[in-house]
Length: 294
Image (cartoon, rainbow, N blue to C red; front, side, top):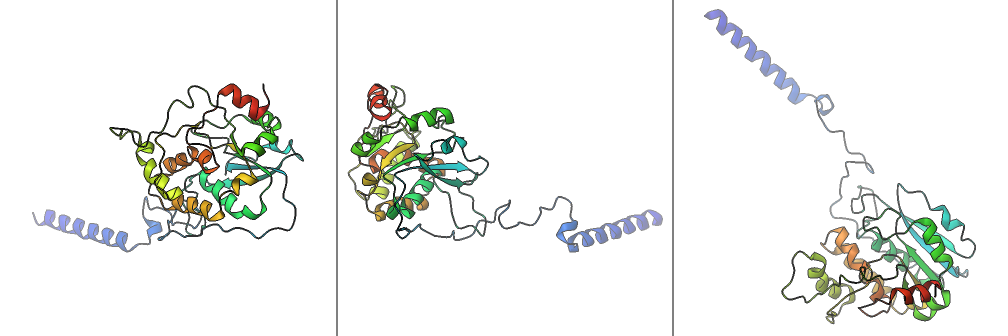
């Protein structure tokens, strides 16, 4: 009996010693311990509060801007599209790279890619407001969940055929011409009763007021939800740079998730650049006016 008690006591003592050693040991000795976070690598250490660095207009360069410019947004993992280079010198290019994890930010970072493509577009417009080319084409990354970006060869042909006089006279054109299906799903901010499953629609009224600063919310918004378009310098500058900064501030302060916040702008680019809330030209008309395919 005494032998059993001694064995139990010894076992308990050994167990307590092992536990004590484990608790006092460095974290790197422990099984399953996570590696220390490294700035700029996973796992991200999200700073609190987030850095607030609104874009600012650059000073005039003194050089004549390019007459035609492609602003191409790409993901980190994507190579710059070679087809754009084949359009040089008629078209110049600027490539804006955004992270795969758009809203995550490592502790030494300065830019939050909130709203995905919209953030990149707005930042570029604000920073280059005093150095804008006459005609700009904005292109989203090739890998898009909504599938609006066309193959490179198709987009190359589109831009080669782009009717610059029409862009200059109209100010703005979606690169995706409407089809019966792409314009059928309208945003109705005052739908009665509200459809809570249409989260973008339910939140559009507040988004509109936050972006445009007025309460004249349209009863219907309809356009191909496309983040690819052509716009003229004159049309961009019909709004002051402070208006684009207000758009950027709303985008970077909203509590909406990034996908939804970016999609808000996909439904509003045509309004920002002077078109009516319902902007759905006939497909054949669009093909003729925008690409000369009459």
